Figure (cartoon, helix red, strand yellow):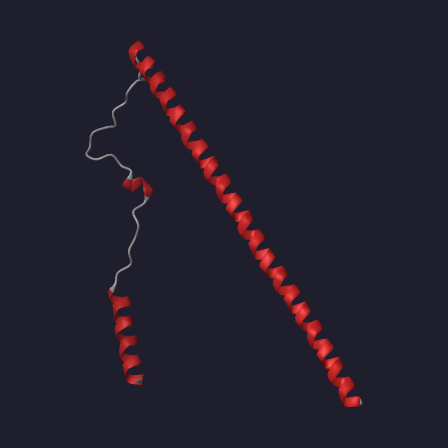
Length: 122
């Protein structure tokens, strides 16, 4: 057993030594543009009147869809919160019922113990 552990330990050490250190590329190296060409500089894009109108229309549709999804999420959160409150109430009810049952059981045992003491004394 000990020899098998030593063998596995030796194999693990050999693997660690054989694995070379992996160096991450620096950010400046990985973000360099491909090739030797300089980056292309572009001026500001000026949308035409038709594109601006289309963009406004798409933005309005996007906002409407976003509001619809947000309303669905709020309804879902409200239902989850209601479910959580119901589950919390059920847990507390069971806990209180358990405490009450334990108190009644202790009271019953107390009366039985008193009866046994009385019977023993007489």
